[in-house]
Length: 231
Image 1: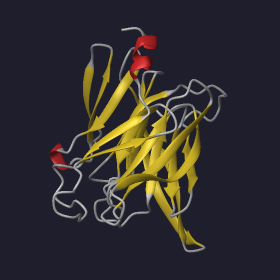
Image 2: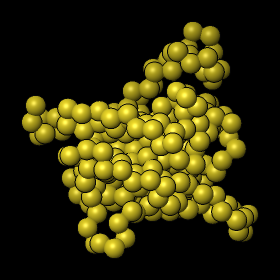
Image 3: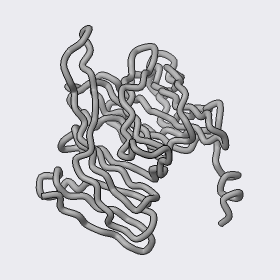
C-alpha cells in the first residue's frame, strides 16, 4: 500500500469502547453507552490511555498534519454528559510517532506524558495546561537529529524509558525526579545505555515483564528482532 493511500484512510474520529471495563460511570438503566466517539479537529495518528486511578477515562491524542506544527490533545470522559471532551491542547513539533502516559497505576508519580518524534519529550500535565518538563537528546554535539520511530516506558520501573531510532540505535533513558522547587518536583533525564543493535533502522522497542521486568527489552528492525539483557 502506498503512503498516500494509507493517509487517506486516517480519520479524525476516535472510537472508544468501554464495554469491557468494570468501572463505567453510573447512568440511568437502559441508557448507558458502551461505545463513545470523539471527533478531533485533525487526523489522529497516535493515542494512549492514562492508567492513573484519579484520572479515569483519560486519553492523549496526537495529530498527523504534514507540516512542522502538530498538536497533542488531552481528552477525558465527562461523566455528567457521558461524552468525551477536550481538556487541553498543546503544540508538538512534527507528528508524534508514539504517545505514552507514565505507567503509574497507584498515582504516586508526577502526572507525566511522553512523546517521540524528532526527540523524546516528557510533559507535565496540569489541570488546565501542559508544559514541557524535559527534552531528551543523546546527540547534543550535532545539529542533526535522527527521528525516533517509537519508545516504551518501563512498567516495573517508571524511571526507565527506551527509544528506537532510524540511526540503528536503541537508547535507554533514566528519568529523575529532582528536588522540590516551588512545590513541584523537577524532572530530568540522562542516557543510561545506548546500543547499536541493528544494521538498519530500528522500528520499535518494548520492555519485558519477565524476570522482574526491568532489565530486558526487545527491538525490531528489518526482518530482525533482538532480545537484549541490560545486566
